Amino acid sequence: MPRRRTQTLQLLMALGLALFPFFAGDYWLHTGIICLFYIMMASSWNLLAGYTGQVSFAHAAFAGVGAYVSGLAAIHFHLPPLLGALLGMAVAAFLGLLLGVLCIRMGGIYLSLTTLAFSEMLRIIIDNEYEFTRGTMGLSVPFILPVYSKTTAYFLMGAVTVAVLCVIRSIVRSDLGTAFRAVQNDETAAASLGIHVVKVRLAAFVISSTMAGLAGALYGHYHQLITPEILSLNLMFFVLAIAVIGGMGTFVGPIVGAIFLEFLSEYIRIYGQFHVLLFGLIALAVCRFAPQGLMGLWQRRMRALSS
Amino acid sequence: MQDLLLYCTNGLLLGVIYALSALGVSLIVGIMNVINFSHGELYVLAGYFSALFARALGLPVLAGAGLAVAVVFLFGLLVERTLIRNTYGNDMASLIITFVLSIVLQNAYLLIFGPYPQKPPNWVDGSTRLFGLFYYGNQRLAALGAGAVVIAVLFLVVKKTWFGKTVRAVAQDREMAAMVGVNPDGVNMLSFALGCALAAAAGVILAPIFPVTPTVSVGVSLTAFIVVVLGGMGSLGGCVIGGLILGLVQNLGSAYVSSGYKHFFGFFILLLVLTVRPTGLFGRKQL
Image (cartoon, rainbow over all chains, first blue to last red):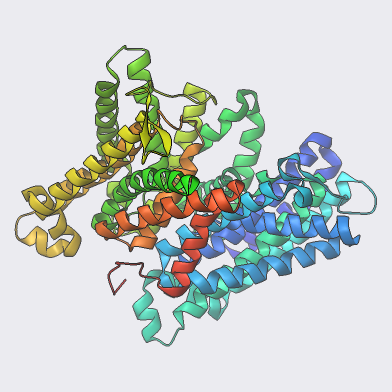
């Protein structure tokens, strides 16, 4: 696409996003905010899985870490939610570093298994320490802003999402991003060119976990209720399905996937909890027949048109 | 003393079943380098089928159990052929696809069988006095025996038969095996299905004792993964030792420390293995 058209498109999209709250009712505004959360989650997971080829199953768990740390700090130490979110982000980064150091040098499968175990372990702790975390009852936390307003929350989430996306984009385009892809394509070749494979992978893991922590903290304070559901495998599945359906390893893929799935799920809500089953089947079909996701299909179509 | 022996017997029983289920994961990892994240769902599927065959179709319990394992074996063949085969060489793709499959199956069970626990009838009734100290359910003893028999048969198949030799050849060197006339795709398909059937065997053996629900599968998968890492990826003997260790640690831990943290001990072992000896107890030196 010519540069001019891309810029116009971006401008139009930004305008649309900025004006969205003034057209949308309360309900769609809520959907939009949830969608922003999923964009952050899926894009940061994609930075790890799509660009370095490491499948972490702890992404929802790190969102949970962010949410619970921030929520507990707000309740016990009366920390303002926005500062709490930063604290949650820092704790997620620290745990990500510890977990990463432990399992990253062992390679792909070990990372997946360990992150899955970590995520279940965290869920068990939160379920069991109900005196502190209120277990499955959920933790009531203050709203993200001093005054309750969905529109302001939307703009805050939107601003953070844009910031996160900018960081991801600049990483992907930097030397570090090149190193990410080199490590994914051929570890040995990357190492022979002087790339420290373990450090590069660790960097991707920590950055991605930190972003998940931030997203989780904001999400928790927006909902004003944090339950162990946030670190369940179901949420993890949504994040993964969004990235897979949108197209892993592309910048736009997770964004498209999040919008597609979130709005689709609003329309199929009448089928109750079985919309998860439908998402699963879609994701399975995409994995099998279009491993590059919607973005891959789009690119193929554009190429077919131009040739 | 009496309590300790009881906990150890329970640990032994669970350990044997953990080993059985983990052998399925280990077989698939060793041969195809694929981690099957839907392992636990196949365990649950077999549990449901054995309940269904025995209760709805009125088959004898053991026949129903055997049939359930056979059905899951066929399902494994189907999954390998339709979903796994075109991901060879791409570990990440098979991880993602089996994870998505596990969520799909969990939600399909919820839709079809509902959230309620289901169990097939007991194979045997009554209980036996063990060591002159406590009474232990005959069903549990039968499960212990059945688990041990299946493991023994599997080892005989892998170590002594022609099929086992082929499988080991492919696990050691895929190209070499293909060169001497082994069809690696066929071996993959069979071993994937065999791995699924082992999960199913664990499922039908434990289902009369611990009824199945759509979500117990997560714990089953995780336990199997922990055992595989503890024993060493791809080592079948390691699986048996690892399974027994995990069974004992879980039962003693939940008895003497806290029962809410039953699954926590497994993760603790996993973290310990990863820090101290990442190749596991009997793993290959090179990964």
